[in-house]
Image (cartoon, rainbow, N blue to C red; front, side, top):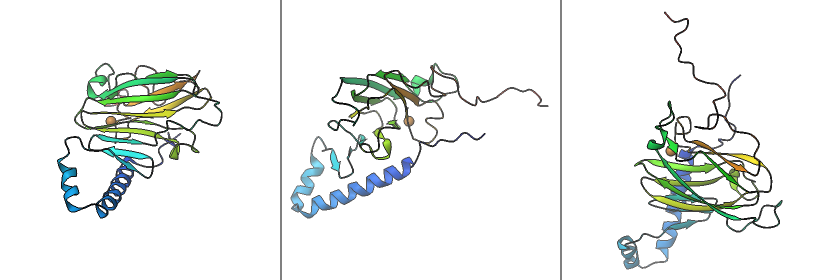
Length: 218
Ligand SMILES: [Cu+2]
């Protein structure tokens, strides 16, 4: 049987292309209403502004937060049960204890109560891009069922979302090519969860383990 990945509906490349095009569109609109001098002031700002885009995404040179939700309560919750902050670090050093992996998070599982408002403080310890991307959230709140933080290099970004009122185990990963396959895979357990996902470093075995044995080879 072929192992499929049904959750991955569009690629990082398309997300980046989308975000760039939205940023450019917003920048053009902003400049249309500004005097030329204002443009130059913008570039000399000591702290660059984080841009807010129409598709519920904010981004700057450090990275982006997409489909953040601090207010909308899922239909099956009457209120936010608790505010919880998860500190996550990402980097190659977290792969050292898991043979066969290259990338990792400092922890690969987080547990929260149903209806929690979860704030993720995501720190990237590497000089490359990493993401904390969760799938399977209700699509009437989160487009593509997704919430996503991306950090370019050694920086930190924080974003917030609210989980529904059911026991569920959500896939969290980094969608940069091969990062999930090489260790950047984790799970957010809401309530009792629904069992471990496969191939979570330190938590679960792969569904289809690699076989590096030399049996039958000449
Ligand atoms: Cu990554």
